[in-house]
Image (cartoon, rainbow, N blue to C red; front, side, top):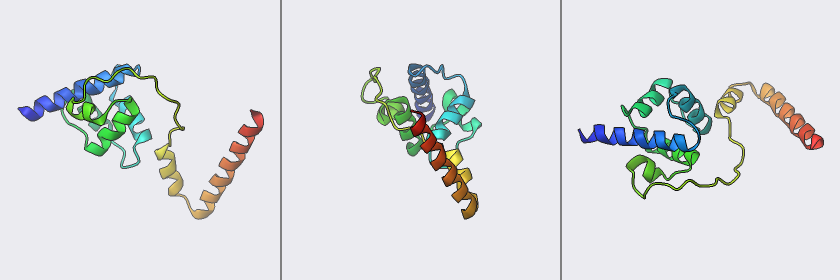
Length: 132
């Protein structure tokens, strides 16, 4: 019974934190996509995201930390409800997100094709500097 209550409370805090960034927490697809953009490990499934939102499961602590960083709340609050309700913070500009799906795809290429990708990225970055 206690585990069920903990999962439901986590789900409520997750949806609240999502709401604070303009997401109503109703889309497991959106949650999985945004989470997987930020998480360097094995991507979560749509089913896992749905279970988090419905209070049927809780993520492992490493995933809670990624969620908390993305949602600008403390991992302790998100996981346990401790530390008080987070204040709506003005977020500092951060470095661009790493697209881990893209990085995984590039890593599967041959060394020669990875070199082509590097050259393309270098040329694109150079052209952006010239345009600005």
